[in-house]
Each structure stands twice: as C-alpha cells, then as structure tokens.
Image (cartoon, rainbow, N blue to C red):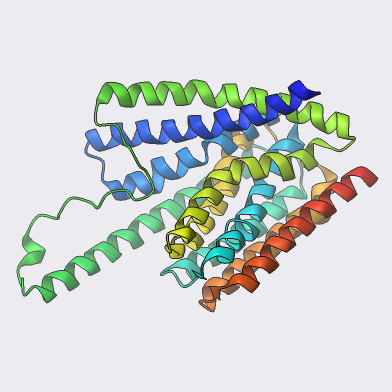
Length: 338
C-alpha cells in the first residue's frame, strides 16, 4: 500500500517536472525558429502546460480507466476556479476585471455545456472529439486575432504619445518576452535535451500515477472517478495554484483569472478532444449526477466574476476554498456510499 502512495505522488511530481522542461525546451526551439512569442504563448505554452493532464487522460482511457480520464479534467476545472482563484484571495486582493475575460468566460460556459451534452451520450468518441478540436481551433484563431489587434492598438497609442506619426510604416518591434516561462535555454542542444526529457518523463509519470491511483481506489473502496476528481485533479492543478499563490504574495494577483479561463477551455477542448479522437472515453454514471454540474456552476461563477469585474477579497477567497473542501468531502462520501 505504501508503494501505491509513493507511485502516485512520485508520478505526479515527474509529470509536473516533465511538463515544465518540455515547455521550456519547446519555447527555446520555437524562438530560435523565429516564431513570434504571441503564437508560442497561445499554442506551445498552452499545450505544454496541459501536457500532464493530457498524458494521464490519454493513458487512462487506453487502459480502460475512463473514470480517471474524465475525472481528471472535470476535477481540474473545479479546482482551478475554487482553489486557484480562492486561495490567492486569502493572501491579497485578486481583481477579476482583466480585458477580454468576460468574452472568454462566456465561451468557456458554452464549451462546458457542449461537453456535458456529450457526456450523456457516452462514450465520447471520434465525432465528439473532432467537434471539440474544431472549437479549439476556432478559439486559438480568435485569440490570436484579438491579441494581434490589441498589440497594434498599444503600439499606435505609444507612437502617438511619442509624436511618431510614421511609426506604423516602421518594422514591428520584437515581441515581448514570455512572462509565464522562465529559464528558456539559449542553446539548441539543451532545448532538444529538455524536449526529450519531457517526452520521456510524461508517459513515465503517467504510468506511475495511474498505477498508484487505481490501486488506492481499490483499497479505499471508491471508484477510479473519485480518485481522478480529487487526488489526480488536485495534483495536476498544483503548478497553477503555486503560480497564483506566489503572484498574490508578490502583489500581482491580476494574472489569475485569464490563466484559469484559458486552462479550463484547454482541458475540455484539447485534452478531451485529443483523447476522444484516439480512443473512446467512457463516462462514469456518478460523474453525471454531481461533478459535471459543479463544474458548470464554477464556469458560471467565473463568468459572473469577470462580467461584474469583482475583486476577490479574503471573505470571498475563504468561501471559495471552503466550497472546494466541501465538494471533496461530498465526492468521497458519495464514493463510499455507492
């Protein structure tokens, strides 16, 4: 039994580290190839940071553990809202009025409803996977256009302020640095080594995580879905949680809501979409009773926070964190009573 806990914890650690080095190596190669940082941020970084969840969901589905595959995504989306936004608010005020957040949050709610609809026609297979990936492509294209338009507007404002009337005829300046990725390797060979380590570490970490999780679920007398919704979902959300907590400590809490919305959209469209294209995903009946509705409620809550530009304080943060603890307790109680 001790080995199962070590396997689960060690697998999650390997997944997080492997995902991180894969992102750094990929960004290093992309920058050397001259790919704009804007495109890198919307594609490579977004996919790379979701790599642990993707590998776990894909491997779990291939091994017939659909509960872990679905539970990982649904649980991560719930944790992203209640914990990743709630806990930093306990430390410092977290504003939710980021530009474009309401538009993306509404899209997130729509995607969540589409995903819930697919869940009732289990398994989620190839047609549903293609639909989710098409929505992902539309989201990335729209995000790229909005980001490019925003950059041009900012440059025009800066040029007008500087009195440079012909600034629009000059070559564009180099993209700003990627704030979300530190220590990008300068050497191509080091970047390649990072990528190889990431590609080797991800499936290795997923193997130990799923092996430990399924054994623990059996020993605890709960379903694989319960483990996916709680331990695995929380483990794969730890990097986002650590980032937002450190940002709050440094009084930079405004970074949180956009990252949460983007992560939740990617979890539903990229992770479920890619997994479903490769192998059908069985949706456990217990997930249909509670968890998908909690996820939808969290998506609507996030939309309200963005739409009304609410600034989360300690009371709000405590309420959201307490709601997550209550949700976890409810999942385990229902899991044991099932």
